[in-house]
Structures are given as C-alpha cells and as structure tokens.
Length: 378
Image (cartoon, rainbow, N blue to C red; front, side):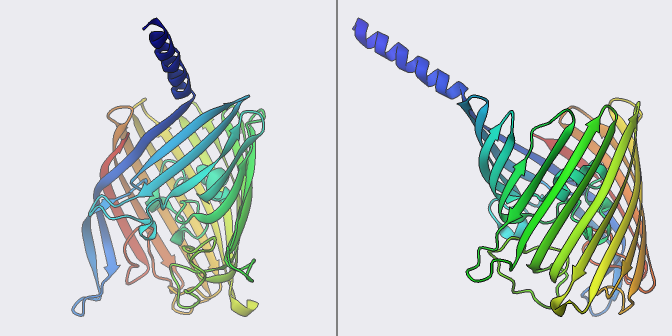
C-alpha cells in the first residue's frame, strides 16, 4: 500500500511539472455595432445608389476567436502554435473565404536569444512592422485604411504556405522576413510571396520600414486572372497582377499623452505582359490623444495618388483620393470599450469613392461612413 501511494505521488508530481511547462489559451475579440454609409451603388433596378444603415461586424478590428499554445522545451526554447478564425457577428458566418482558421494558422519554434521561426498561414512583414505606424494598423481600424487597402496595412490578406522568421528584440531593434511558396509543380514562381521588414523603438520614438512582393496573384477587384492557383501563397490581394510590389516607411513619436505618426507607402501592380501598371502612393498623418486613461480621441488624414488604369476610375489614368477620419474610444474596463468614428473620402479625376470596409463604391466622388459599436476581448 505504501509503495502504491509513493508511485502515485511521484506520477502526480511529474504530471504537474509537465502541465506547468505547456499551455493552451483560448482568446478572441468581438467587435459589433452600427454603420451608416451615405451613398452606395445598389443592385436594385429601381435605385442606382442609396444610403445604407446596417448592423456591422469588425468596424475597428475583425471579430475572431483562436487558440494559442506553447510548450517549454528547455534552454529558452519553446514550441508554439496559433490557430485563429475570423467570423461575422451579424450572421455568425466564417470569413476569409470560409476557412476554418482563415486569419492565422501556424506552428514553430521560438527562442529568447535568436527569435522565432513559424510555418503556415501568416501575416507578411508590412503588417508586422509597418502597419503599426499607420492609423488603420493600430488604433483606427478598418475604415481608416488607405483606399482599397492597396498596401495591406490593414491585413486584409494573409500569406499561405509561408515560412517566417522574426528576430528577438536587440536593444529596440526587431526585424524579420517571410517566404510564401506557390506549392505548384512546375510553377515555383506562380502565386508566391516574400517580404522583409524592420522596426526600431527608442523611448517615445519608433520607426519602421517593410517590403512585400507577390507574383501572379489573384485579386478581389478582378476582371481577369481570377483562376490563380488557390493553393498558392496569395489568393486575396486587391488586384490580380503579374507582380505586386509594396514598400514604405513610417514613424511615430509619443509626447506625454499624445502620439503623432506618419507613413508613406507605395504599391505597384504590374499586369500580364508588363505593358501596363497601376501605382498607388499613400501619404498619411495621424495623431491620438489620451484625454484620460479611459478616453482617447484620434484623427488621420491620407492622400493617395494613383497613376495607371484603375477599374473604379472610368478609364482615367490619374486618380486622387483624400480621406479624413475621426475616432473617439472609451474603455469601460480593461477588456471592453465603446467607440464612435467617422470617415470621409473624396475621390478626384473621375474615380468613385469607396471607404475600405463599405459594401460598395459610391455613385460619385465622395462617400461618408459613420460607425459606433462595442468591442470586447476575452
């Protein structure tokens, strides 16, 4: 009897130790509210365009739930994984093309000294390093995105089949890179992606730069080439193109409760044959002021200059967009906040305005989006 008790106690101690070395966390974010759009093109025969008022999901951040796990392998090394699914609060449907874990799905090894290597469906370096310098990639969210999220600073697409490296923090300097495989026999360069980026933080100052290139990707605003290999690296980019190159720099500086920021990005889309291109230059200024620990207000202005044929520009080869956004956010607790925001976009030279996140473009050159809602993290 005594031997049995000793064996049971030893077994229990080993189980406790093993449990202490690994963990799995369920987490998520729910963002739901109401949105008003002053003008959207409709599919109804009796109305060319109309205002819209709808219950909306993901006004600032996409609603999601996920599992995050880590196992201590000793010597400062961990095995890690993340499985994250996006969904709509309006009808409970899965987003990201109905994928079970469409936002992120990866596993890898992390070390305190050398950094992290992960494999799976992941964010590119523009999202990781440059996005946080923009309003939409930090506090502003979806509607503050640059037109069509042409530079992916709002992470509207992910990279499949990707191997990714992210460094440890070396006295404020972090950097990394990603390569997404096409997974296609005989088409190594078809629908592949690669990116690199860095960020440096020193006290109240941060600066970042990133580069992303994709080849033969399909697009959301597609009129051709929509049958690219769906198992490839990118299947959700803004425009179908032979080559897309996105790069930029950004910085922000905190002065007490005020954070000032700016960013410049350029996205170049080269089409089949290389005989035509579209180039987006995005210039952004943003500011956020924490009036109290619970209440904050923010504002952002973006000027976007587009050269080359744009599907929404009525064959005009030089379109311009001006966009202004305002937001106020109040924290009810550490995990729950309420917000209100408005974004106005003016499109010039024949382009149709469309605030990113609205359901359809306006019938003319301006569109206004006003939203309010509740955000809860768990």
